[in-house]
Length: 236
Image (cartoon, rainbow, N blue to C red; front, side, top):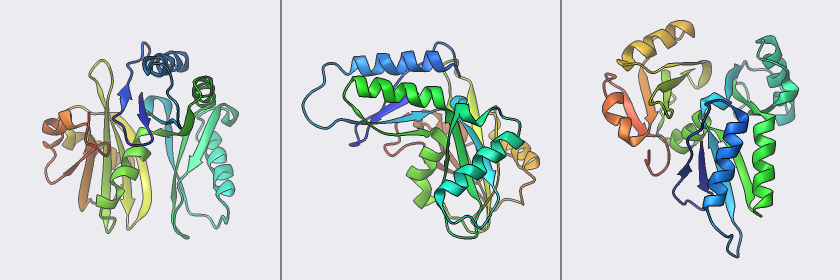
């Protein structure tokens, strides 16, 4: 889990005692906020980036839905149809996009989001957003991604046990066509092959890999891939 000052300050990270556990995550957030020391005068804004352990990603096929709220209703329905649980326990978001294109949707545990908001309020901090790492990294580096043709976008996350997970999204002519998360064992080329098979992806023309800077050597083993830092500063 990562906290970043919305003004662009370097991120502060926390290692969780139990990966994927909401209570453990909230304890880590509270410790991070306490580590900031006494609040100084002025506006203090925080954004929270959470790992894939606290996020579900799925593709919403195109539908002529005119309002953002309609896409959230569609996301909740898809969540139920996929057997992922009760939608009341999750907070949903769906990316904005041009008319006629599929959307990438995410779901984050409501208990986690509400708990973080409560902790920030207690510290008199303005919570700007809570965002899953894949969409956060893509928003940071999206301008460097060429969307023409069939592409893969890979975001690699490493947990405290040094195990990495690859979140792989596929686009075909600017349309989302699939997303899957797999253990990021070397060689990464095999991980991408398996992901493409599971998502029935078209033959790839380009691959983009977003990963922490210290993992660049491992990621560069994927032939022809363009490596991008996972955040704006390229910090691990």
